[in-house]
Length: 353
Ligand code: APR
Image (cartoon, rainbow, N blue to C red; front, side, top):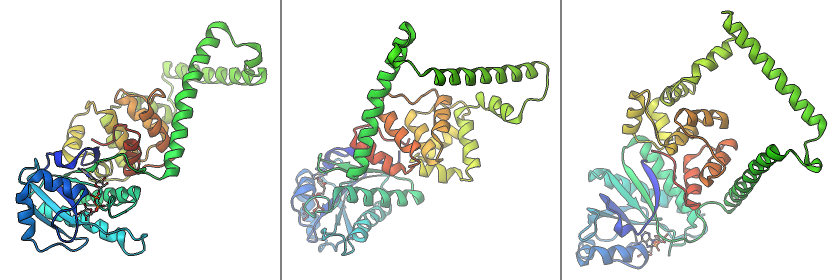
């Protein structure tokens, strides 16, 4: 998963480089700046003194000294002044400039804090969105592992409206479907009680429809048995029954007119994993990988269920993760960054691979 969000103390991250949310003097401060200097030891400050400060939106690199990370990339975020003073562009520049230095110094793994989202007052949800969008754009052209490190449980990391919508979707489906299933099982055992039985007309309609379906299927079976040509749609359907996950994935990439790279980058999947899937027709992916591809390919909820089934999975209403995924797919919201921000907020695994 080239871009992921983790809850941790950045000074503990064993990456090639960690990024410091510094101030223009580069001579230390509070927050993550203070934590990094404390963990790195006095040699860090001594090296910072030689750098001559740093402009907002720019970045400079030092050694990591006593930190697990080999390097510290110091960048200075904008102070939030309401959003009308170029804050977004300056913040995005912090991530771009830090990543440029990381590439120049051969870094393969980089960890960022939420720059400007503390003392500098940048709203957390927007600060996270700038971080994810800028890093995601960078990863379209580069191979690197990027961690966005969230340290505390402050304000929401997603919009309040989206959080509320998903919270009620999870509450309804999670509780309701369970009761529904129980109710169905009970009625099946003891028959529907009079006052809650399905209206007779509806029951009759359903029975007629079921009978018609059965007759159509038995007719098709009959014609198949006698060698008559089956409708093309049924032939395709039968052919796809034994299609593997990998075959369905490659078929869908072609149908959507995407290149392999466009698809796996959009799915937050690294190149090596995609190569494994492409070269093994029976590859068994993780559920988070299947769902990431479903989102990248903008599959319908039925196509998503079909792809999951080919990998041996299903969407269940006894899982908050599955219900959140169903929310996004059934609402046609396929932005993996947004999906992962919400999954992170609900303490669920992120999608990608
Ligand atoms: N690991 C990861 N993230 C951390 C840690 C940590 N150990 N400590 C704090 N954070 C988070 C905060 O919760 C916040 O979300 O880092 C984010 C950035 O907060 P600040 O450190 O306050 O940085 P910023 O908002 O960019 O303000 C920079 O604060 O510390 C001073 O010298 C610094 O003057 C500069 C200003």
